[in-house]
Image (cartoon, rainbow, N blue to C red; front, top):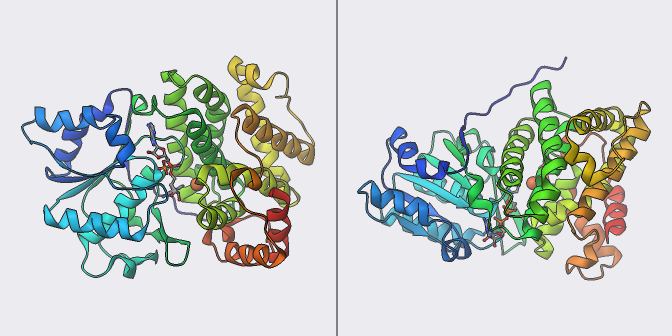
Length: 402
Ligand SMILES: NC(=O)c1ccc[n+]([C@@H]2O[C@H](COP(=O)([O-])OP(=O)(O)OC[C@H]3O[C@@H](n4cnc5c(N)ncnc54)[C@H](O)[C@@H]3O)[C@@H](O)[C@H]2O)c1
Ligand SMILES: [Fe+2]
């Protein structure tokens, strides 16, 4: 067995109503004056109200809320957040939102905790000391950022996503309260959920996979195949919301310890260039990445497939959504093809687009596609992919996904 390290230091509080425990979570971290980071839409629809009420009830007054995070957050937004956090002398950061909010909060926390320009810490392992306490309260079920050691922020001047990766970027606490997801619309439920499915599948076949991340990846996938179509169709089903939320966090721990792959490399590149939601971009590239990898990872995909089949025999809801598809298969390549088929079915059940042309990507000439492929070749995600890809391979996947 290959040597590996596994780290997941974030405390997880899971359950309906757990967001109300925010004051206790802060107290345990010796903090009481947080900067709360969120976005305008979440603030307007009252998702933060129960959390803010806890501060009033505890006699802590009204905490400062920075609510200007756009989808695909950028460096300017981070800088403004740092300015606000410094002005109030924040002793901690709380993120309440999707991956965009959480990633922004992580990078704001760098600016609040260390001297120098935040961009000096871009890249992998450029932090040397612990940051201020960070509590993440996800309102989407997909990115796993609440348990990951990375944050991605767009640089509008280059149109690229900047990666910050460090063990000091782990949140101290992740509060998983499924009631905060009840307002998430079907399309975003589906798209964020497919991000989590991609984390599960890519981490299971990644070059640096290990038995601990494997077990988490399999668990997250069986939960997502069951609950994602349900949560997409019936957004007020709190059990389905709870399953997708927990599964996305589990997949987050898996990919943080095993890596992702070619699908994320392409989703990061085209997502940043054409402002495609991260989950939608993953969902479009997932069948193409899976097909490309079959010749190198058929056995691994077959293990996923046969695990899902066993899970399906215990869960009628899996069979309900996939009729009689979940039948175990001994031949690895055939099993991998069945998995590919099931991923396509899942995407269709979730009513997600399957082609780049459907999400506003303009017609691309050969030189545009070659440039995109070259950029994706430099994305760190690709080094974990089980099959080595050439720029020509990426060109053909991008064209196939168009
Ligand atoms: N750090 C990591 O480990 C990691 C991993 C994967 C993705 N990401 C990043 O995460 C970002 C995407 O995050 P996301 O997919 O969660 O989407 P998002 O954070 O961009 O949110 C999308 C939209 O959903 C809305 N929304 C969020 N929660 C809602 C709720 N409960 N009810 C109603 N509306 C709600 C938001 O207001 C926003 O308009 C990308 O920037 C991506 O790069 C980070
Ligand atoms: Fe992702």
